[in-house]
Image (cartoon, rainbow, N blue to C red; front, side):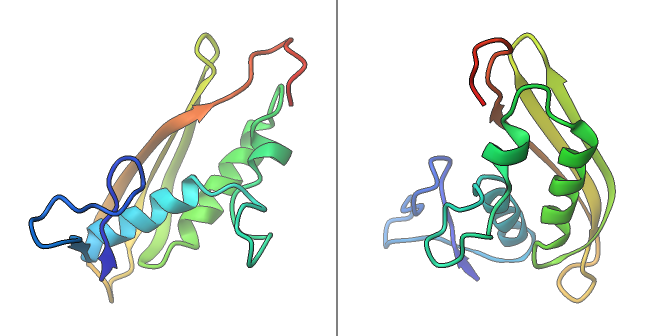
Length: 132
């Protein structure tokens, strides 16, 4: 069991007597979303943890196959996930928004079933702005 987080990634205290707990598939999805939002080097205790957003993803003309591999690997490293059967990245060039969709199977020891997660909060820098 884990402490539930709200949409702002703060502890969810929506119940009257304190924090809410999550387990099962809700906890696995929360772990996955946490992995998607962690930038490499962000965690003080281990600078290797996280996705290389500044180095590989949030750059001008990113290499989409490499980025797909990174998201697939981060998904497979999420406790409770056994496989990734589908991973798709869609970049909306007008808004510079990247949508990540992953599907696969949960670890049967945790939950016998499939998942489909969508992450669409990545805003990439505008082309030609000089930002990396």
